[in-house]
Image 1 (spheres, rainbow, N blue to C red):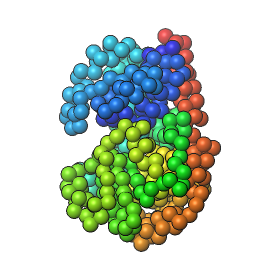
Image 2: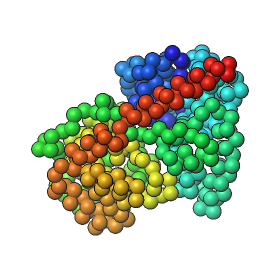
Image 3: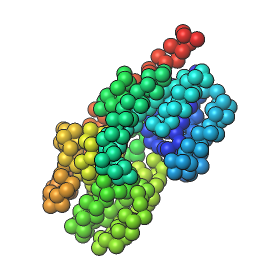
Image 4: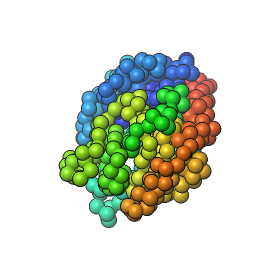
Length: 368
C-alpha cells in the first residue's frame, strides 16, 4: 500500500475525474489516498464513502490567490508524507518540480490541451494567443520531463505534452450511476451539465428552449459571468429555466436523470474539437438521448452508438430539427447506455490507471 496525494489549487475537491474516478480507483486498489483541492460542498462526505480522505483549500479563485496558496502547501504535503503526488493543474508544474527535488514521486495529469485552450482565451488579445500557445509548449516540456510520469485525458492532450504520456479517459463508472428512468416516466426536460458560458452553448440552448414551448431546461453548473446571467434572466424563455448552480457529482446525476434530452452544444473552439466531454458520456450512461455539436469525433460517437444526433450549433434551425427528431425517436437512450457499458466504460480505464501506479511505485522502489 502506498500513500497517494491528488493535488489541485484550481479544481474543486468534487471534480469527477479526480475524486470519483482516479482517487476512488486508487483507494479501491488498496492505497491510502488523499485529495487536496478547492472546497466543494459534500466532497468530504463523498470521499469517506469512497474510502479516501478529502482535505480542502479556501474557495479562492483568482490566479494570484492560487499562487499564495502554494506557499502553504509544503507543510500540508510534508504532514501527509505521500509516496506519489498527482498534480492536476498546469500552473503547479514549477511547484511539481520543486516537490520532485524534495524526493517525492510526482505525476502530472493533463485534463486538457493547454496550448489549444490559450487560442480561445478571451482575456488574451487575439494577436497574443498563438505566441502564448507556442511559448507554453516550449516552457512546459522541460518541467514535464523531470517528473516520474504523465497522464492525459485524451490522445490529443497526450500528444500536446510533447513527451510520452499514458492516456486515461474520462469514461463513466456505471456502478456510480442510478438505474435509468423509464421512458414513460421521463419529463419534458432538457438538461445541461457544466460551466455556463457562451462558448459552451448557453445562447444556443436558450434559443432551442424558446422553440420548444412544452419543455423546461435544467442547467447544472456555475455561471461564467454575471453579465451572461443577467442576459439569460432577461430571455423570453427564462421562466422555464431552472439553474441549480454547482452540485455534487451524485446530485448532478439525480438532477438530470429524468430528462428526455441532454445538450452538449459547445462552440467549435480548437480545444473542444477532439475533446471527450464528460457530460456526453454521463447522459449516455443515464439513458438520456444526446444532442451534440457536429464535430467529427462527436458525430462518430453519437451516430456510432445511435444514441441521439448532432447539429451545427451556429444554425438554430438545424439544432431545432435535430432535437425534434431525437425527441420523437425511441430506444436511443437505451442504446447510449449499452455503448457506455461496452465501449466507454471507466472499468477498463481504471485497470489501466492502477497498472500505471503500480509500475511507478515498483520503479521508485527499485531505484531507491
